[in-house]
Figure 1: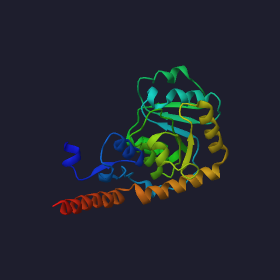
Figure 2: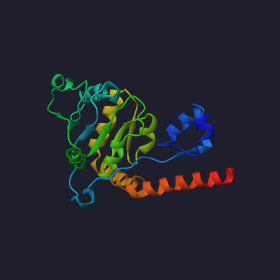
Figure 3: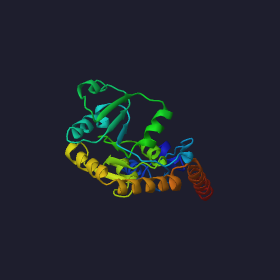
Figure 4: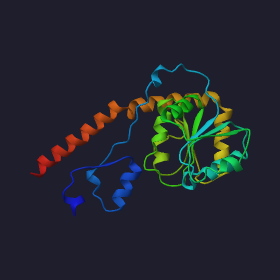
Amino acid sequence: MTWQNKVDRFIALTQFARQKFIEAGFPGEKIIVKPNFCEVPGVRDQTPGMKHGALFVGRLGREKGIATLLAAWKMLNVPLRIAGDGPLAYLGTEHRSPSIIFLGRLTSEQVYHEMSQAAFLVMPSEWYETFGLVIIEAYAHGTPVVVSKLGAMAEIIEDGVTGLHFEPGNPHHLAEKVQWMHDHPEECRQMGQNARQVYEEKYTPEKNYEMLMDVYHQAIEARKVDK
């Protein structure tokens, strides 16, 4: 088969994805993990300030856990800003609350501004995210993330270090984690600093270029051996 005989290296975005490919029959020795990256213009020039409240960024669809998010907020009095559009956008009119603001679709620059102001991001997806670029965009802004303990999300976020995990689809558990973040601002800020450090170590364009070149070098060396 082509993928068994004609490809020297495959790239998976996470260890979770790599394992799924192996389970599907791809040769594990040829699969290298190289994550996505992002570049956030001007983030280094921001003046540190007091971050406040929670932020959701994404498509307003069932698979993204928006219903779980809103159910959790019925138990909370924590400011939440929701950026995005989609088939469940109508929930913005059905779930009116002083704590929740629906921002609609935003530009990248507007999203980055929201990330710079939020104390933490919430990502309650209920399906396997391929990677979750919004996570490392939050990392770049020094913003920790509360995520579903599921697939790539649970791998990228180190629980208690760069954010918190909660049980997917469980609004009570999500509410518990959000309340903890809100009640522990110093710990939340430390997680944000940790997140920024991880971004600089793993997710900048420069680091990603180094990883990609290493994949190419491995493929070239493997081809030499095969000859």
